[in-house]
Length: 612
Image 1 (cartoon, rainbow, N blue to C red):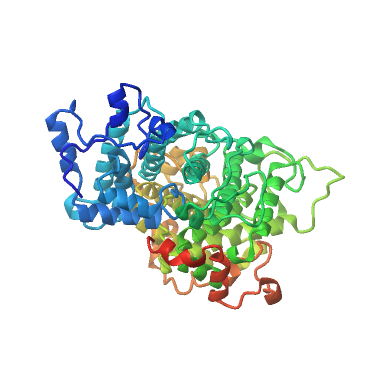
Image 2 (spheres, rainbow, N blue to C red):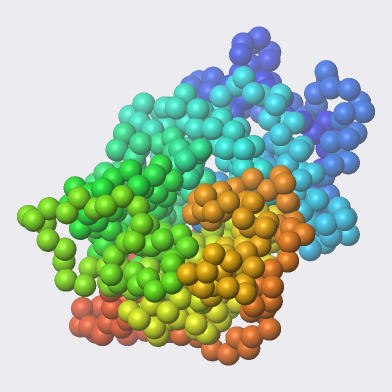
């Protein structure tokens, strides 16, 4: 990498500066040069910048080898999952020629440097390195705040994820909001209206929109952070297969409102994120407390969401369903990380939805198979009788989804599928942990095979994973604190004497009582909460060992995360097992599935994945 003695890219390219016209500042080609089909280049110096500022920016970048290694991490973890708007080999070529704008480079370094171990010594910690580059990226973006372009939009998306994972939820929400406003101004939500140079340029803009859409759905909680996108109003095409994007091969895809079975893996992921976002938003806005319709009523939100999840699973082609062969094949194709994330989010949506009718702190003697015991009474109608074993099937779905989250996350760690890349995976563990905490102390007869020790072993394994996650994302430390308090509260309430005003011999902790059950409910249910008060997650309060989640770490994990096997993870939620019809699936092994996934890549497969 050349010396960046004048590192910052100008807002105006050389041609626009010479003509004294406003330049859009888009990289690698501004709008005016694009319209005129003229070469576009930016000056390498900033005459107006003070020398001291230039020297600071030059010194802010690590060596060339470190930069390339961190950029490789970005494409391995993020460029193949949600941030797919950059083409790897073109970006690396621009990087080698010193053409990547600093605001983009700083943003990428801010996100991926936390996985680059040499930064421990260079910046006294990888998290410190991330914050260092995030600050530089924000400073660079501030100089072009009034200019609306796709490059800045992409930078804001990257930084929003960084800030959210660090626990700066309000800052992340603001950065994401800026990106969303840019999407509207650039008309990226309407396929026929946004500007484009060619198909590849249009595809990059589509992918930027859908990245923004994904983050909006995953960061929103329906309460103080409502989602900004209305799925029904988006007419932009879903992303094309990665091979077509890399090769610039024009492909016509469908829209979010018109599903089919010939979509890319990213498109199916967008669909499940859309359903998950709707579930979380409905629950955050009040959920069942704001709607007394029975969940089996076809007009109720619960019914629509549950059906949407079933429809999504039915829509998946056989080579995208979760089986050992399909997982191995997607890993071989360089899409294992996204494939795993997609199915993890599916389990999360199921788990989140079927938690809605379970009391936050289940009382003694309660069994979810008998229906809800709190909240507004259901408006039952004679014309819509309760389906047989409805509540039993619902609690089974919730618990099995929670177990599948824990089990599959363990599988992701074992297969090195970047489970730590996104803080959203920690939210999945958090949601599953609420089920495991209830099952640890409850004695629900309808689910007795999941009660007690099996649940505690899964919760202990989840806790171990969250402890590892907090080394990368500070927000996970806050989740550990909240889950610890929730576990203690459930344990106390399920072991006290309900007829004793003093609750028997088990004292109720004053710190928990002061915090209030409603506040704890708000944090646990909506998962993400500011960590400004306790950034390290663990407060002074220490529960008794009997009700301390950390005591679970002393348990022998045994085979807690080896069951159910991966084959079972793909099965319908109401069944523990499902026999696979070989004639229907026609899957003989990894090679067959691999051929299905890559059948449109032709002889370019080696070229495509050589950049992974």
